[in-house]
Image 1: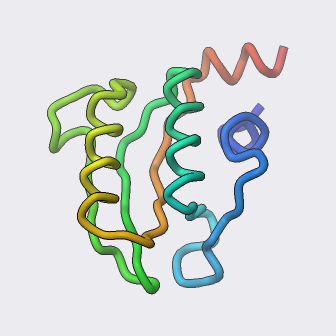
Image 2 (image 1 turned 90 degrees about the vertical axis):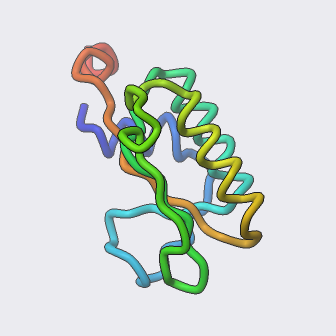
Length: 111
């Protein structure tokens, strides 16, 4: 199983992609509520989050990465804090992230 397939089946299910062409097609954007539940799924599966971006009207407003927080990509402390900070600073943003699903998890889903 490929990473995008895994994310589509287990993390992004029943959530509306708000990217209507303002960003690269492969970057999925979600509402605050959807992104919050996506982060719950990410944490459940132990998926790494390298970067989160908050977008408003097709423009990046804020960005955070695990390196900025000096945490591992799989540590939920950094991405939950970054997300919470972003949505408290600016309402009505859409959110996107860069993920890493481990080969072990992908292999388990394939087999």
